[in-house]
Image 1 (cartoon, rainbow, N blue to C red):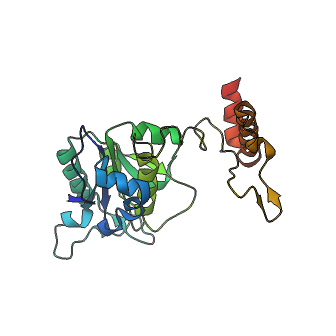
Image 2: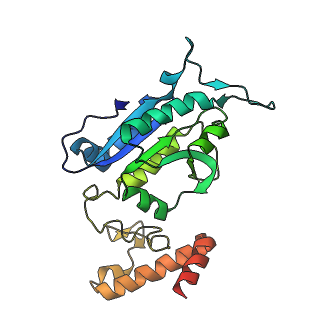
Image 3: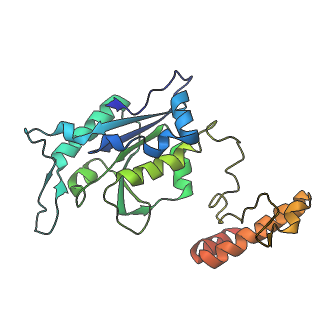
Amino acid sequence: MSDGATSKAHSGSPWQAVALTLFPDMFPGSLGQSLAGQALEDGRWTLETVDIRGFARDKHRTVDDTPCGGGAGMVMRPDIVDLAIRDVQDKTGGKLPLIYMTPRGRPLTQNRVRELAFGPGVAVLCGRYEGVDQRVLDAHDVEEISIGDYVLSGGEVAALVLMDACVRLIPGVMGSGRSHEEESFEEGLLEYPLYTRPTEWQGRTVPEVLLSGHHGNIRAWRREQAEAVTKDRRPDLWKAYKAASE
């Protein structure tokens, strides 16, 4: 296990992220920048990588084989992946939820992100080729999560998405403790439209209510806009929101 970045001493136990991957150099990627990168440097969270290929037993460091039953592509071997998983569990005390990023997983939600962010951290298995042998996923009761109905070249980008969503909720990472409370999905709604200066741009103006200084009216307008955009763009969310409200 190798450090994804150098971090300073931090009081308590920082949120811990571990990536099991064939391409450890893909981390920390974007998470080494901006607020997440500063929080990583400050020790508010840690990032480590486990190179799955390091557990291969032959001189060619083979981690995959042809799929049983035929078909295109290759499948990551259960024995090699199992060794990598056990290494992580031994070094973390088995306290981290183990997640496999895959299009067939349950969709990632803000509620699940919040649960993970408020826990000890997460260990993310990044697949490659056609995927990972099902037996090792079953053996370790791995949670399968999808970030959308599309296919990527590997799980590393999806892992970065999951980690980013969690890290920004860690106390002290974002500039304001309230900055995420009105974002999309926090209350089951998409976020309302945002505006800033200049108040007039290319003949388009900022809605007058936002310049009124009347906080009650502003809150009401934002709620109205959030409901409207959710109803229009995400009828599934709107249906769930209305059911919860009733």
